[in-house]
Image (cartoon, rainbow, N blue to C red; front, side, top):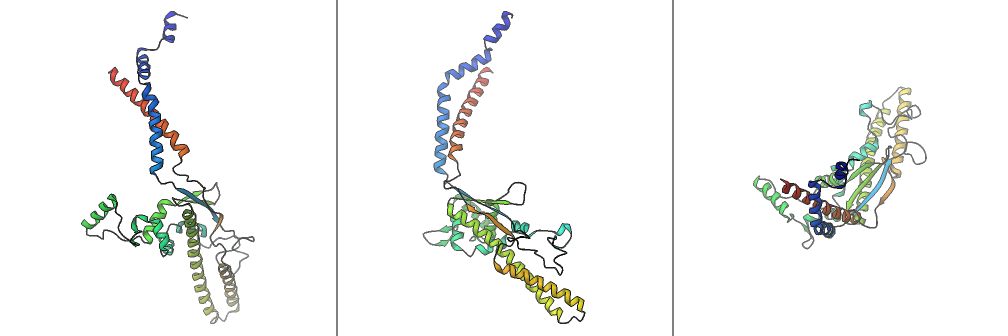
Length: 310
């Protein structure tokens, strides 16, 4: 091997040698920067309020079997239409479970929860004065600025939280994830109170189910009343027999609705949460702080080296 090649392999380039020299001279910075990052991460853990993530798994109720609700749409010939979910064009087919997922964060469902003052206080603590025991505008700088701008625009600067505010809160903080490739969904909600997070998921699931159940009962009773009136005026036996079968099927579905079993969504896993807070996670945050401190130190040394070379 030529002597020049050996020299290039054994001796670093002048620029690299200068950079390594700066690293050796600034060893104290490389030692202290991870420690500083670790301290800052630990301080952030004490500033942030620990929160728990509650989750539950829901899925569509079965159409058949002992846990099934049966066919949702009454039909005069249930045997022939057993494979149908709903009648209509393919573009119009929306399952009860799809309606359930859409209504979870809707205003109608939120309206059924706004009557619970204790729940609203926990969800909007900035708008509730615990000492005065009344709703009042938040006192933060950002809130004050927003109120001032609304006042300048001639609007009311503040209103107590209502169903629309609750709906927006749920749209922001309720996470719906698909479980695998099937129809199951995992609902997740994060809050500083573990029990409250689990209770909110249970209340939200029950309120959405109740909304769909009441709407189905209303439609069925309206249809049954109309068909019953028509039966009294029909003289054709075939038509009368077909409508009687339809009323019987409607009564069967209405009876299943009155049982109180899950209608659109079944809770396969009830709400649960870890016993320890999962956010912020110190197992991830502390090492990340140390690595971030070391990375910034190396970046500073590299920038300093490039500036000196110029």
